[in-house]
Length: 185
Image (cartoon, rainbow, N blue to C red; front, top):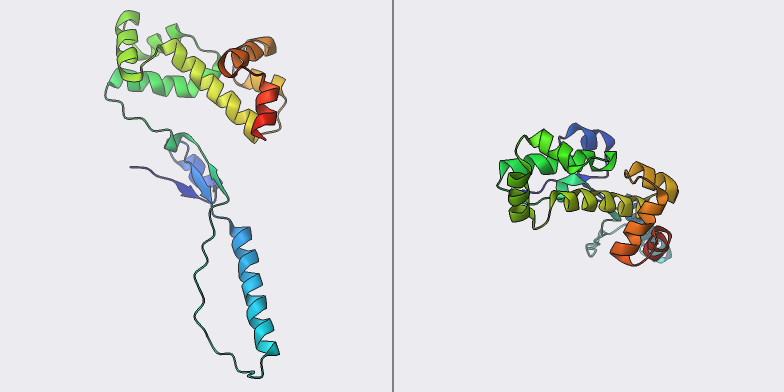
């Protein structure tokens, strides 16, 4: 089951266990279109010889959402293994804090070989790769949705240095974080 909020409400976003994705309804566009329609109706009535307001059927106007704020509630993947679920939870909440595989293993409480096999079976890659992917996804999100400096983003995402983040981006996207931001704009 997918749960999604409306209008990016702060309270709703933080009262849920998993940060809730939200749809911005496009309220400004709705108001603009409604005002324009009302103006046209009044203008037509004023220019009409019949001064009486006669209700007429109007076509339904659909306004698309203006934006989707994607958060953890839409980042759903069915996992059956309770150890992998625990590991994923820990990684999602701590990847940008510079965690290592050993910390994930310590949190879950099983051997490295056992966890690596389970993780590879459930996710198709290693625990280390999952940590890497989480940091990279967060960096991409910050590059496209904020005006934070690239240096600040490297720090927030747990990269040991700005140069290392540049190396990761070059390897994964064949472009620098700056180029990624400009291309996404």
